[in-house]
Amino acid sequence: MTEGTTKLDRILIGTDGSARAEEAARQGARIAAALGAALDIVYVVETDRPHDTDVEPEAEAALERAMEEAKGFGIVADARILAGDPDQVLVTEARDRDADLVCLGPDGGLLGGAIRVGRVAKHVLGHASCSVMLARAAGATFPSKITCGVDGSEASAKTASLAASVAAATGAELHLLHVVPVFRGRDSEWTLDEGEESPPELEPAVRAATERGVEPVRDMAMGRPEHALVAAAKRDRSDLLVVGHRVVGGVGRVLLGSVSEHSAEHAPCSVLVARS
Image (cartoon, helix red, strand yellow):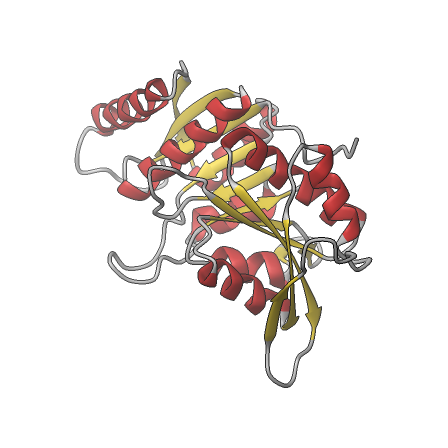
């Protein structure tokens, strides 16, 4: 049995009362209910700036809405109001509660336009000790189709196992996609036929998925991996894109790898960055 990122026993949701955060609460509660995970919901009162109104009633109302969303999935969540810098507090809370997944909104971009990754989400993506999901608008059946990027490594097999766990619990269709890196020329995509042998870059992920009881669709592509993953998620109308976590940079400068960073920033759907 593949181990590592496959465990999702506790999920932490961060909300600020915005529509994006409430969508994150809905999606996080849905996954928690499907997997039987414990659910924590926190509202972080930002202390490094003045507030024009009494923020505590706003925080309580936001938590109440998120808790009602969880109740709709049959979950009684533990809700708390915390204070501090939201990005730092969420990372610390995830560590202290031994969370396996943090769910939050992208917290950036223009309403009605592209929803980009803001300061809080970017910090949590780079510094959280667990997996992170950025929630974008999705239908009531979320997740119905999951695209997972794999590259043949042990880490990507664990990522595929996590994606398969979610797919198995929710009944979602799982696409495993390996992109052959080609940085010049025309991009191309194709799906392997049933009975066609999986290439070495796909086989470990396929085994990990089947161990979870999921028969995945096996997709291949040629092009820049970060661009191909986003394009595939858009083309297939996936509502969840799962990618591995890779950090580059030295002390004091933490950056996500190009695939996870580009996917989180540009995918048209929710993105789960899996961290083992």
